[in-house]
Image (cartoon, rainbow, N blue to C red; front, side, top):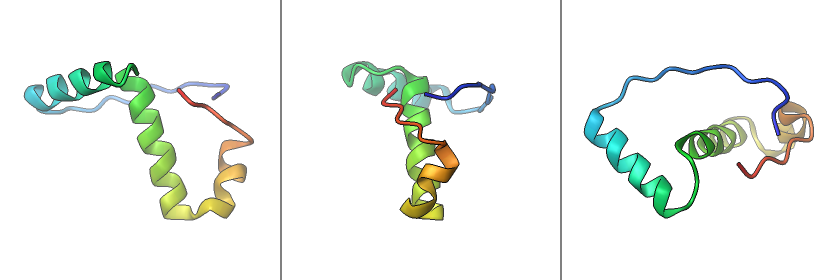
Length: 63
């Protein structure tokens, strides 16, 4: 789990936001948890799995 947090404000279409929130609810995750998962996956894809440990400092956050 991350030791520090930072706020990220994103402007999105209200209909897409509502659909995203509903899909998250169906998966029993919060929108914040899903966004963090998207970010981790994107970083790993962009930088490679070898750099994942260095970037996340051993983080294993399933949230």
